[in-house]
Image (cartoon, rainbow, N blue to C red; front, side):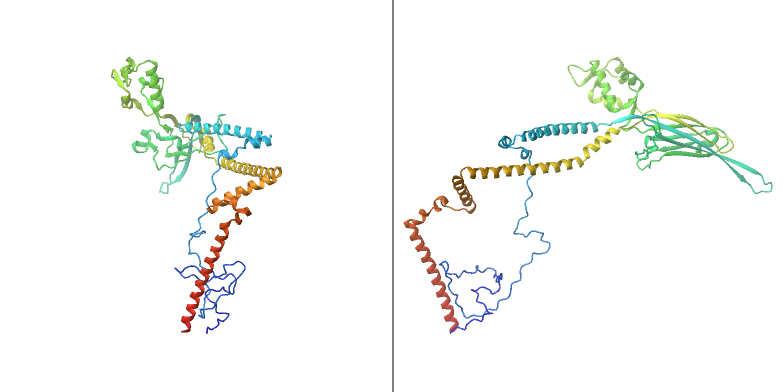
Length: 478
């Protein structure tokens, strides 16, 4: 006889007394078999095999550390598709329903034209920024010389008093605005005085200060730190003549042209591209290009005297021009340091013309790199996309309701056919859903035979299970 199984010891084929509990699965084992009755509404009581099994509660599996927010079997959500310009367009049917929507379409067309214009202007600005944008400004140079008289006493037997006089020369500068006034706005960016020059040389009287101290030089190098001025301090009680040579730092580099070619082209100092362009204009204006060999220039008497040849190849022009290029002339200022007794201070100023970056260039750069307006436009576009999607959804809902109101029966039939078709596509079902939903389909002769065969297969399956269970019980009794 079989020993009854206690209530707290469950058979492998019986359910667990705690709701929601799942028995552990053995790797490689087949899934648990359902032991319900093949007949709906009738449950066959399960037999106890008499074998006791102590079941341990299963521990829910934890995801491995650093596995990310999504398990390996669940794909990450796909990003939303990017909206297209066509998604902003309202269909013709909707425009017919709402005539006021034509104003929106007109604004959309105007926006496209405005975007095309802005894009074209941005390209034009980028092309302009590739070229140097310089403007002429006045730089006022202040030359200040200060005299210092120091009284010193010598402690000797004579106790003679001597007076030592020194002078200090300071060179500073400020940019003038359009009205010729010195800029005093503290918020405006200030450019250092030394940034305008490549070198500065102060030459003092050689007879007074000797060959070693009469020369003061400053030259720019890659590690130079910009300063607001230069100063020189020397002892002396007599007037001193000094020569100040200032070499401007041109950006891009300016070149002084040979006087002969300069008079011919009408250029004294300019950049290399300007000089080459002026020479090409002279060649075209005087028709010096050879008609047969287009890469050859037949020089006239003026160019022959300069280049010392009769013909010239276009590829040889840079080599011929290099000997004719010279450094620009420095700015020379003659100044006299007037030394008098007592502490005195005198200031003189000179105005020179310098090239600075055009303020419009910074505004163009700010316009190109600015993203504030772009972010605002993107946010407004997103709101428009959402509004248009909402309008299209409401239009679909209106057509749905309107079709049902006009012909409820026909609408339901069409809707059921559509849903059946979608269900067939989703479930991969083979058959005729439209025919199967009618009662005549289930009254055919072959359907009774199919039902009998189904129940016969279920009975045979259940019999095999019972025979297998009885065989296990008999083996346990022995």
